[in-house]
Image (cartoon, rainbow, N blue to C red; front, side):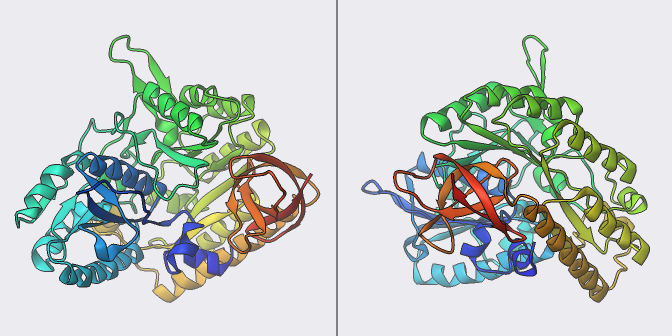
Length: 478
């Protein structure tokens, strides 16, 4: 990953560029509104789960007469779906709220709402101190939006950030926002039980609960019938998916769910994110090996290459455990690509421990990584227990070293594909030229290739690779 691409991942580049990076999303789309419909506009920041949640919100709003718009100036309801994982994300949201405040002054009666992970943590500041918003809604309270909007229309400042142990939104059919009509997300679980010391997710999204597998399969079947050809199963930790039938007591684990979705149709690709090293089982790997339509790609965050730092992070595995999981992947799925998340400059990290992180990037041969400097989040175990004692300039230098190394490893990884032929699912036009298509192979690598007649997004083609950058494979249809 280049430094420019890393900036995209951190939300420092434009919206259109960031759409390619899977960390910052913006949905602003148009459809024909019925007479009398109100208009809503929504932006989402953060992980793929936030993007998926926005599709649930859109479905709920549709039921109460709200139609979407690309034009924020004509919106009756302006929503921002937020992320608290890093301080930079919160700064971005604050800037956007200032913009919304200006729009609201020009459109009397318009409402502004904050959704998602920042809602619970900063509700008081948004509602009382800064008075930037009319409603604040947590990730488990979206069904309450009609009531909250009604109260806000009457002049009240409305809030619901209650977390739930049951809510999965399994019965809500998401409205696919800004969709290419080819790929879609399916949320299979919510919340997280892993108390990583640096992470706010357990506090903002609540405890882990799994959606019933039958509704997941039904959603996959519906998407395929509507022309979609790839689904990504989403969860904070998909490997800990566990659903128990309340009538029979039978349990479905993630490997079994993965197989059920793969059996929907052999031409429906299946991906998943994110995996946790402590829960990634050989059963999942063998299931992936049995089905050609389960993509041979695993996002397996390591966070650090040093066992002491991993213990401070409360990751519940050490370096040897992570290395064993990589060996299992190479043994059972030799063609698989593995990507990772990496944090530079965690509390008390030494230069030697930083070198351990660099060494595991090389050893594991990650196809790409999401890389960040440690950002202390209020309320986390690390914020309460450890001093954020690595100077910012040291964090930045270590992060740049990680980025440079990963860029070199990614380039080498991609150059090894030159001369190979891959099946690629066409997703749409290349970002750089309308004369080229782009799509991903099974290993989640972006492939760019010249168009041919009678081909369209959603078609599968075989592409022979003739060149590569650190981020992209270049080829020709064969």
